[in-house]
Amino acid sequence: MAKPETLNFFERVYDVARQIPYGKVTSYGAIARCLGAAKSARMVGYAMNGASEKEDVPAHRVLNRNGVLTGKHHFPGTDLMQQLLESEGHVIEDDQLQDFKKHFWDPVIVIGLDSQDDQ
Image (cartoon, rainbow, N blue to C red; front, side, top):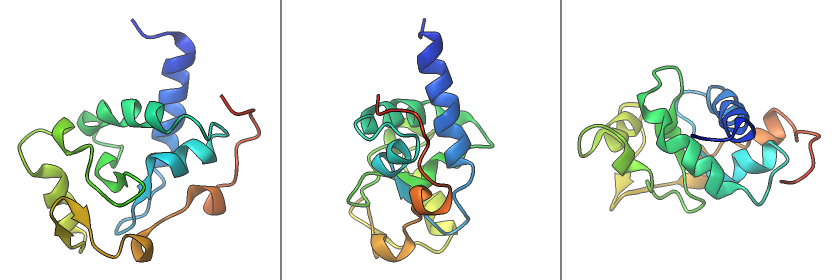
């Protein structure tokens, strides 16, 4: 069973992910920085692993810092993450989003940095 503080962190991750606009993507690290937990990108990844089944969380829009679809194995089916991104107009080659920087949405700039200390 996950600790309450972990579950709270996951919910905060989902709150940020819900704000990623259609056609945009972000990274695990960017979400972690937005939450004031810059060293917690891996924890954001853990949260996103379980989010692919949450219909209101666009988990397919969260990639690694290089635009690689590292979370694709946590989606039902073999290529669902890629298909969802392609349906939003993205080009994927070899499990990597092309023009990652062009499509990048930075929650720190848009939402701001959470005032909590780095975890």
